[in-house]
Image (cartoon, rainbow over all chains, first blue to last red; front, side):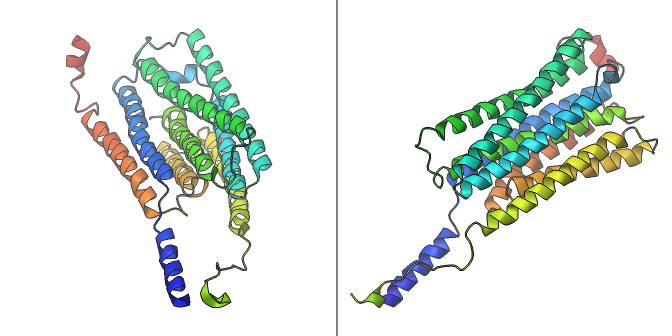
Length: 206
Length: 118
């Protein structure tokens, strides 16, 4: 019987190595499709920028220091999100709450910077309908901003849920991890936008 | 049933949270590196270097940031291959679309006069 039990355990162990968390896989698939979505938005912006280089000079309105600050804030929020996921895996609910609050706070700072930037651009005369640059720029960065807002809402829900007492540290770890994947994705999209849309404008001849 | 008729759960000598503690240090180091790279990118665009050189370095730094966040913060390095395939497929299609559109819509391939007539 001992041999049978051992064989059964070995079989279970080998199956455990094959188990794929459905929620996580679905999130990765979604993020893959979102890559295509943002890939198209960024491509459209860059193509129109190349086709109509004289339509607008973005250096008139761009504030690279502010955008770099936003990038830094989003990177730090990703760091806190990684810590929140790690805390959840360790079953440290208090640490999870602290880190998630940090992520939400940084996310709100990022959104505030974006709202300030949009208001500044509008005051300078660049609106959604001004030219092709305005249309593609607002559509792309606005879509990213909406993603950030959804992420903040999602994390707020998780934060409040953790106070209901229904959140089991181990069973909910996968939910937190999935939310974390979404948040990190928002971060990597911004890494691309920061370089392809903002930094590239400062290189002479590009 | 004797005491030896069941297989006890294997007890590891290793602290179950040891892996998470190791990850903590990785996360801290990565956050510092990512911040430093963002600072370098900001300074680089103001430097009087060759445009192609600046562009190449910016591209490489962004690519590193992109891959680093995916690999460590998003745990793809520690996850199963199917997760990489799920995300990689989307990434490949997105990159393919970007490259294809870039070629199709390059100024030399587009009849600008025909466009402006509309």
